[in-house]
Length: 157
Image (cartoon, rainbow, N blue to C red; front, top):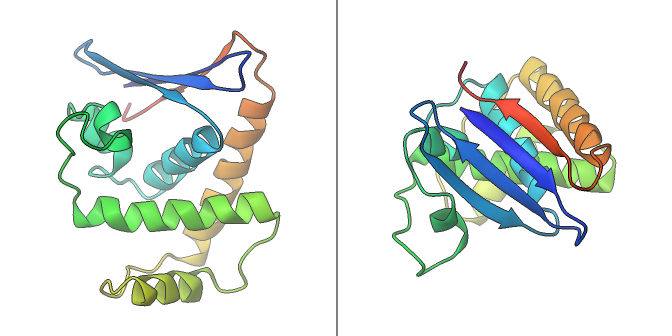
């Protein structure tokens, strides 16, 4: 699957997904949503997740159904995709703050407990470090993309 983030003058971007079968879905991204989706790519790639954001898009989900309540049918989120969303948010917050959590898994457990969710699957230190490196590298690549140009990633190949 081809994942393309195209940068616009308005500080927005378009995320276009072209699946292996040639079908497409796309969405306009504003604010911090591009770094968020890049962190999704890092988490889902490093952990080899198949039923989270990009996996669901690869399986045919419409990207706009994730973002606009009541516009279409909301996708049924797997337990994996809910877990992934919290993990991605935590990595993204590290990026914005510019500092790492001393105990990533402890923060994740506390977040799940606060939300009334069952205890999360914990990450290994190796996975945490790999995801941090890839998140930062992808965001740095995106920052270097000129207006009108794209950052293209491949999923599942």
